[in-house]
Length: 563
Image (cartoon, rainbow, N blue to C red; front, side):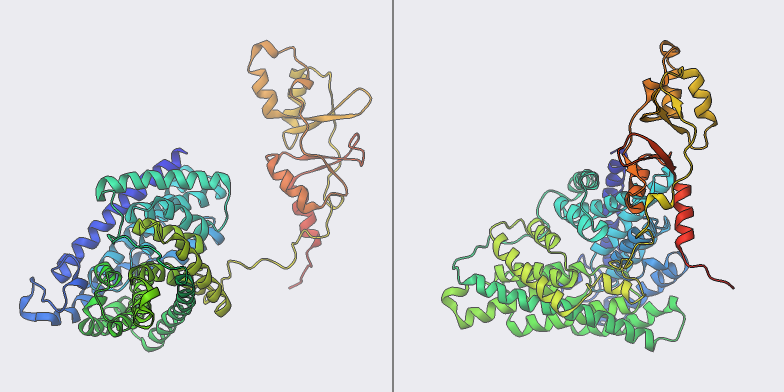
């Protein structure tokens, strides 16, 4: 709990610093707090360049973050979440400590220089790196290390988006990919801590300021379901185009990797010159679309432009997330869809706003295939509960369409392209078919229940595993005694005359016929000191099982090769 609190506090402070870096670099490189809403305005720092400065802003940013990423943390390149997923699933939660700092600077420079990416991926990687670093400092076991990484991811999302619930479910559904009570409690604790810090810095208002919306006709649910189908297609299409453009950039680039963002920045600058709305995250443009301020043709242009700009930013080696671009695409798709049905069926279509909000969640669900996170995060980002039912319906449809069209998500595909399948499990366990009889050791000398504790302590101290069986006078099995229990009791002078029976306990029961895979789980819960093997009646001892004996049996069962 203490570590979860510390990780949450660190992620909250990291989110504040990260947002400040983005704001600072955006002001330095564009001269505006958010250039996406400024049209073709000039940069006041270099007014003589006029609107043409957008050709240079990505180049300058690339010259700064390209060498930084290449030299200190190459995993900071791209959208970040797949690297965290891989660290949890395959590396025991270990993330290099320098990733937090490098990712913060690289992503802030990318966004500030016009990169059309979001801050979700970076803040997840930053918070996760903080959690992993703290776990290594205090040397927690691997299982808890993974939870601390998830705590950092949840804390980062919670603080930067003012969305504590969304942070929790993002971490559980995408990072840990497993719901357990202990992990859930620690992630919630971290998320709440981080959110409190974030609200102290950013305020308590929803992330997007939108008017109230509602569903006016039941027939709209069919329209929302149709929008969910389109959103699922767009989500999968975005995923494929993203990696197609990344492959194209890999094929075309032959120079040093540190220079790739700067040279590729010229192409990104051309996109920004044509569509300045693609500069940075673009939340003001998103809000304008939700409020119905754009015509259908321009909305579709912004949708295509965002797919191209985000894919190009990632492809040239930029650092940033794909969550915010997914929301942007969903808002454009939903607004265009809502405006179209308004023209075709004005009596039942209702306002454009609900379609835009639902499109935001549905496109993210189609790309990331995380329906729980999509529902919660849209509710928290907008504060709109009135459309929760149609939102859930559209997100489920988008998820099903996405699953039908692709086996991978926008996050897992990056790993699969490296030959990593997080969902792959061996067809058969190496322990399959083996029983305890194949692994148990000869039974160690048992201790009689009447043996005085001081004498028994000497025997336990000499035992190889710090545990021995205890039997009655007639040889019946009573339980086991451990050296740690004996030491604790002997530390109290009042128990010097106690017998070994005072520290005898019965661990999980296994027999020679128990499957070795099942017994191994029980052995782990016994702190690795060994388990007695009993007969079928659970009254007599027949052997002893240890980690060493399991390892020996596993080695014997594997086919041997010769050089």
